[in-house]
Length: 181
Image (cartoon, rainbow, N blue to C red):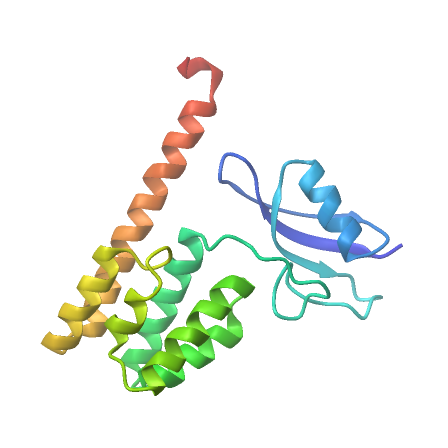
């Protein structure tokens, strides 16, 4: 039986790393979910041929997963890095879509890239996905496009999103603590 190493999130939003023995990747995913852990990355040990992120592009059976704030924060941080390095927006989106672990987010990024290739502005392409890119994100990107400071605007948005996520995580942890009742 192969050993799988994992990175998962518990119900308090904390990142947990560990390993477990399971017959296959699906069994390992079920074991983590039974422990109330949401797997982010699950990798088979060196003796197994299967090495892929959970529910990622290389996973055997792709399940649609909700696009999280973490997905958007990671994308934004990486996008800023590529943009500051002079990589065109379309190439950046295609690259980041290929690297995304979440197939639902990959699909959104490819649709945004397709819209840009068709001649739409970046902000207009993002606006077509309101469940992923909220009004603040879209309007800030539009202002960044017009002002020529897109990388700076998205960098600042990333900081705001990170702080919001930290506050939400702290509140969730506080609410889950019995002493706070």
